[in-house]
Length: 114
Length: 114
Image (cartoon, rainbow over all chains, first blue to last red; front, side):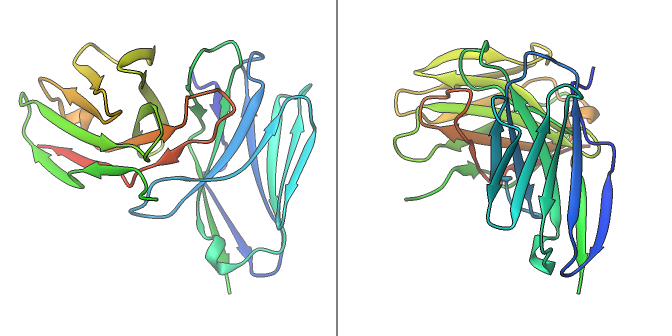
């Protein structure tokens, strides 16, 4: 039962354009969402997060949008740069869970072409 | 401040053997989580330890176990290895493991079971 799904295994965009990565979830108890970026041979690194009380959070070139009614979130990267080429994971957690437990999506490989 | 350190980086074992992986969290971090990453499956939560106690457990068989020491270092053990256990095993740490805390990941241990 995949509670967090990233339906696009890969995405290719031109440098300077917008990258939009999508994520859907099924568990209505999830109330905190995060995006992680992973380069080969490295562990994932935190990118940006959003609480369910918000519908948008912005940090520089990265913006995450949350649509609770659709159980959908997206990560926008503007403008995209070649260094953004990596695997992006969407993750979710629930306040009801004591302690740390993230549910991750399958990941989307983003390739930004110069 | 040193990051999360995982040893060894690579491991090759044969079916039926057992393996122990080690994780040293960031200094001061008391919550340690373990995740399994396989191609196309994203990161699957194994377990989380806090103050030497297992606080959360994922849906993995009992062959997967772990422990945490008083200095917050953690080990995970997989007994009776199966081919399907081949994966990247990632350790992550956070201060106390609140659900909205970001996790800091190590580079992982790549386990190959032959």
